[in-house]
Length: 322
Image (cartoon, rainbow, N blue to C red):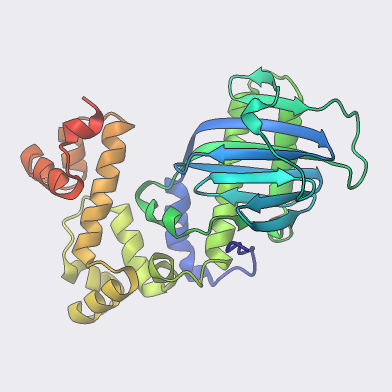
């Protein structure tokens, strides 16, 4: 089985600062939704790009999620998030041959939403599935490294028991999906933001302790405080002494703890964060090079451009695509 942690008991309140920073930086874009209703036997294949996340919510019935040779059963009310996408299938039984979701006739309801229905008026228990599926660019901003540390599948079958307020949002998504109402795409997008944030929060709070590294560092209240501060103020002229003071430690003890936890020096981490943000701001926000340099604390465009070239292997202009 792939590593599929579920939501458990919340952690102490003191870890909330960096979780807030994580969720505030999370953005979804390029959203595409499907409402699928199919009788058994069914087998639907998804070939999601690795730069995209895939979300599935089982509204009624059940399905088997298969990724390679690994399978797990999803029951009504279960939700899964595949933060790095990839090839996977939802099927009624393992022996059914799958069909690519893109090859199945769908009825477009709006620009980003479509409906697939095999004509079944109702689903008997165990005889089919009604599910909501979404594909999106999953951006955690400066905390993007967390995506590479996430498991291939985040199974949140217990999400509703821990966070019952999510259920009305999932139900609202299903209603919006089934009705051709004005503004459905915008409403679905906002609901998806909140549901995805709830999934990520639940996993970070309760299911990621085994992964170590970056997440382990964040769950350490003292070290997490430093990382949260750096992410809040990436343009500050950080020194090892400044970060050690945030942690309440000597410089040597802090630097050793930081490198052990994250595999990079404190100042190396600051540079990596700045370059990720710079790339995002240049490509997506289309900020000028001067603006990016100023916001990230560089004294001049030339100094920033040298640092960017050294870190990424390309100039800021090349990163912009022009």
